[in-house]
Image (cartoon, rainbow, N blue to C red; front, side):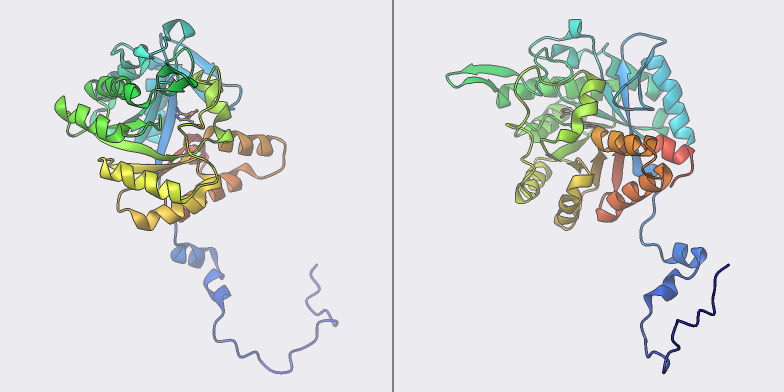
Length: 345
Ligand code: PBG
């Protein structure tokens, strides 16, 4: 029982003259709902999928509990479930056996590869109901696991920025020809948005958009993804092409460059440790902004929930709401299907 007549609580001498009482707006759930500034809809999400060659396989990913790699037929079943939940947008990543890889990542442009096949089949099955995005990067296709091609220099092995562009463009073209709506370059080579735009246009794909991973940091939070996609670099790291975590002005510059080169949407990645970047970029551009709630962010929350340290439903909702509130129009998240299916958002 609450003791509402606690004699130790002193009565007020006079009524408080408080004209402004913010708590009036929090009085009931109905009122709070009516004044809520941020809302999440199923169509705000882009669901990532890892697609593998073959038929009839799905493989759990140890570092990403609840997420699997699917062969194209299994992917179609999962995509159908995602559409039933109201999701509209899918982002495809191809995962290849090592035997398919080479130093130039040529399998990336194979029209029979898992991603072009998945695009064609999803388009056939779902028509214009689905918006298909594809990741464009060489790291899952190169033997060395870097996002571009390499060159020998007197200073050692380096990433050859300009010669990586035709490889990336060939990959984007294979996706466009298969029927992708948007290609999403995540390699962080300079000039790739403009190069991709020209390549797509010259091939007649003027309607295929570019979602640029414009602001992509060299982050520790991609760890589980690299296990999922088999794309960890075999030597060195990605800090000569991905952004330095200490920089914010550089993010605004990267975004402005990609917009000038013809990007249709801009991405900030990761999301949670970079909400300041999202909020700073929001007033700089009129383009849709996309935030990538990356694999390590997902794994971290899953681990905490599994350890009983926090309420997963509320923590997922709070995380996704924060990303939207900071300025994202669209959120790429491994939580999307579960959060929608469980009614967490
Ligand atoms: C490919 C790519 C990466 C991610 C998306 N595209 C990995 C990387 O840059 O190493 C990470 C996504 C995630 O962590 O969920 N370059």
